[in-house]
Figure 1 (cartoon, helix red, strand yellow):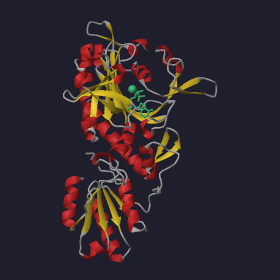
Figure 2 (cartoon, helix red, strand yellow):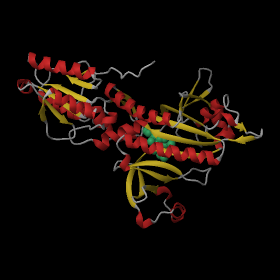
Figure 3 (tube, helix red, strand yellow):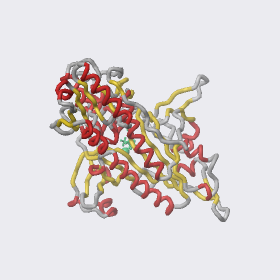
Figure 4 (tube, protein in one colour):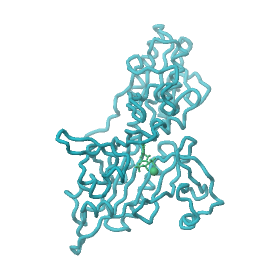
Length: 429
Ligand code: ATP
Ligand code: MG
């Protein structure tokens, strides 16, 4: 039987090639990017375009893992579509022209053939499914991917919150009827709530009525996380646990939804995801149909479901940070324990090395600060990097045969013996 083995990825900071910086980068205005650059999580290539360094890649992967687990549980089948896009399928839905969609990046083959650089994937997914889906027996279907998207955003001043290259999870549903679609749509809305819960922002993330687009009377749903750094304004009904985007907050819409203006509070928010009923706009245009039990050709009702994976990373970084640096929720932290070895006395080195080995063997993710640096610098880095648990081994702790333990979020450290330490970490990692 194949067993799921936790990836061995403990790390000695003396071997990590990234370094923390003392000063905030001057060419960056967004706090999320400033912090992430300073702590060595991301590297800025240019405005709105960032590379992920080892610690950042861990966080991005952890967010992705949570999303993937929930999409799989909901029955999603993961694919990876291409970044390079043929022009003809986009012409069929009238989304190729720059007049229609103004943030395409486009490129050319050597022979001059125009190509699109993927900004979303409705058209290619529908086109691919034509090779596999034709009967009522093939449906319903949920297909998703986690991939980089490319958009020529006018303003890219919000760090990871608005990238020109960014990571998105996009899922597409295919149903045989409106009723079947509605059930899937509501199910995924619940799955989304679960994702934001697991990321630690469930209590401040609202399902928000938003514009459904030009081809439907219906609303779409955004998932908006309350935060001052958001570009959007939403009105929240705390009692009902829902919100409405300012863009569509008209007396008519409020009535349609059943909300009262007096019950609503205004907040800034970040759109961390959205789900859209697409009806059969794309499937019809690209000629994807199914044949029902009676042999009749029928339209396929679609939905699309996006989550901003890298935007979430930026939001979570900024949302939880304090004056000392990053504060990662355990579920997505780059490691579980920051083990700081202060000093290089043989006994201290031995005790720290031994603990590192033991924790690693237990499958606990450790960042081992074994660098030859001043204690103050190491503890400042521990705070900046923001791993949830900190353990210090020093002359002082070795003398009393103990370890110093502290949570990133608490101010007080305590001395514990090894059994106590392992118990604490076992129960919280
Ligand atoms: P926005 O309204 O923020 O421009 P959108 O409505 O165009 O986003 P979609 O195309 O539906 O967004 O993408 C799905 C999700 O991807 C969004 O909810 C958002 O979280 C994320 N996203 C969209 N654009 C960007 C971007 N430029 N950088 C980072 N994340 C993005
Ligand atoms: Mg939007």
